[in-house]
Length: 125
Image (tube, rainbow, N blue to C red; front, side):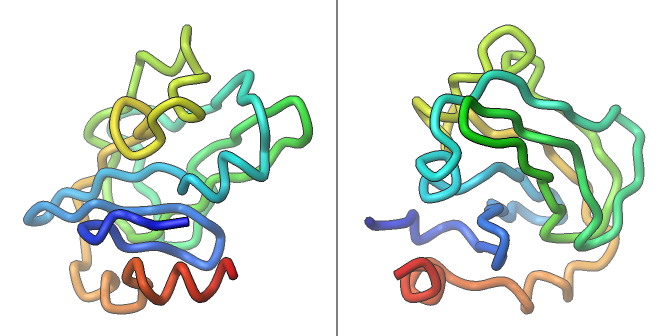
């Protein structure tokens, strides 16, 4: 399994695409494969503040439900409302249309604690 080089990953299989002080957050291809068919995603509200490691919400699948943990701290500036009616977008395109939230990061130094794609690949193997 290959992972996009422009993403950073957590031990819990979330990813962050960093663009300036904005982090686009979702779950990795590995995570969505482990969960199976995703049926529902509970997301935070725009304006919510989250700390690194906090639960952002819950992803529910046929096999299991799992918390989604924030890879960085910040304020939720956008949620992917397409997932309300189409949670399967995470299965179909987890790094594209299946992103979950966008955060305005409050501490950019936190990204140094995340894994690059090569480290994450080693982690899941």
